[in-house]
Length: 191
Ligand SMILES: [Zn+2]
Image (tube, rainbow, N blue to C red):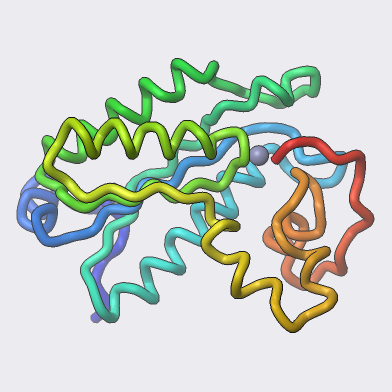
């Protein structure tokens, strides 16, 4: 039977037993507009799916748990559009620091912040630096496209258009609808 991967499905005692040996992944995303054709949960849905699939693959070698996604992110640059539920940057930083400390208090010593929204990128890396200097834990932070880019781009002339880019670009449309052709890229905004 494959190991259970979702932290939220474990009991208190199961978390206590697994935390010292497990690597915990905390997905971070956003609820924001993604053009006229994608839902506002796009970043959160894609990031959570990537975290779960990566954990499935990695669990053949190491014990991995995926924490509930931090679905709200720092999206103030999207706020002129409807459907944007954004945390100001200092709030987002404070939320991430509190969640990392909560994971540490639960016994975890290996933490990965896996990000799916460009506006969060600087914050996750700052939090990882801060946590690493304040606690005896191993912590890493990266956006999924940074990790995936070398595997996505070489040797495929068409892949650049499908690599993660703008909030409603081909990469996001393909992520939510794998069978859909690359859509024309609407007006480019930040991720
Ligand atoms: Zn985004």
